[in-house]
Amino acid sequence: MESSLNVIRESDHWVFELNRPDKRNALSEALIESLITAVDEAHDADIPLLVFKGAGKNFSAGFDFGGFEESSEGDLLLRMVRIEMLLQKVAASPSLTVGLAHGRNFGAGVDLFAACKLRYATPDATFRMPGLKFGLVLGTRRFRNLVGVDAATSILGSARSFDAPEARDMGFLTQTAAEDEWPGLLEQARQTALALDATTRRALYRALDINDADTDLAELVRSAARPGFKARIRAYLGA
Image 1: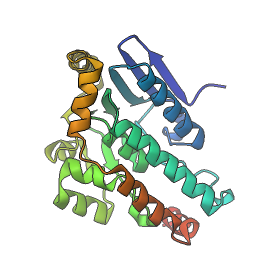
Image 2 (image 1 turned 90 degrees about the horizontal axis):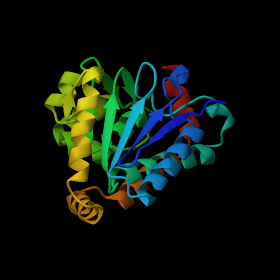
Image 3 (image 1 turned 60 degrees about the vertical axis):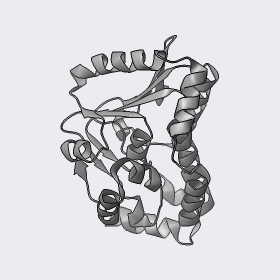
């Protein structure tokens, strides 16, 4: 069986390719756990550069709702917590992290992309974070830190899509770039990642981190633990 995550391991960089193109790289339970394990392994190995990309037509369609009716609300809550744990590992990574996005991207897939320090997307890429439509507070502070309060309120409050040019203008994207430009950008990122030794790079990123991991996790748990989570998801999917 083909793995839902391809990991390309080089001495100074690892590439994590989400490999569920038939499901638009939706984040299944297995894919989330594979990502957590692989990121932990990269950190243990002091890999300077971590790259996240998606196979097929897009980066990620976000949370995989397949079979959610068979899951208990407790199981769904745990899956959301595991996604947040993954996002926090990427956001607080001692490595330089790069997200490469193309196509239509949603929800937790956008949050994973947003957790990266450098974010490149094709000019035709689009993004949407509809979690608040079913009462889920996920990635909100990280998004606010990137785009500012006004833009975050406008986009998250209406759960509307935004395209690559708007994303670039409000600071969500580092740069728009066609896929044939990605190798050059990754080489620049590799040189940046190697400019500092691991201890100094870790100290720099720790000093620059303005997120609040414990508060973010608490907000997520409160939102997902509110009774009726499955009913809210059902209503969202049926809308």
